[in-house]
Picture (cartoon, rainbow, N blue to C red):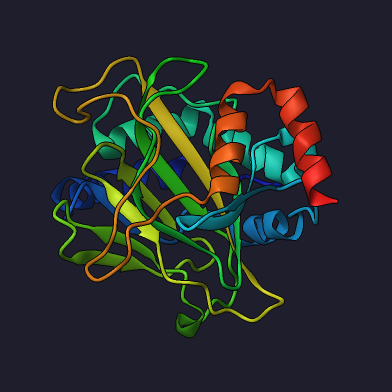
Length: 269
């Protein structure tokens, strides 16, 4: 069933200049955190559509989380919101905020879509993969939209932004309903939510993750093409994939998607 506007065009245009100033001045890398852009009832509806099954499970020393890229397994309101985030109005808004032109959305939702972390889950500090496997374009921006109504500080799950030397967490973002984070994606944008989640068993940390690309990028942003690279915080053990997760990760990159879906269903039984 169609829903009302996810956000108004006038709101996008009105907020872009101030958000751009914050984005350009931010540390430790370019980012902006803000509330009030999205219709909260729409986001609540998206959270209510989160499926019980069909999630891809990441389970390693570096990350314990769930992800869903397949639109056919999402609800109608969720699909509409994602299409808006991949649409012309929001792309123009991103270009106004970041100063990046020629932004390319990702209809495949590679690595993005819906994310969910349950109690005890985490995502260690990392930099993201820098190339789209199918489109062969350069990943430039992450947009995270949080879906967690009445999320308390003590639940944890803060997005952490770290400096390049891994000596300081420069910003922490509580993932409350309607909060949006836009940040530049390159070798210097170290981020994650590395502490195990402490929310009640019947709650989970839910978000929409959208990634945006350009054909080429400025020199110096990425040294060489890479997948996700994890880093340790001071006093933390070096995050390493366990053997089981390394096999699954390798299979996902080289096994045809239809066969990978069958493998995931067999693993979940």
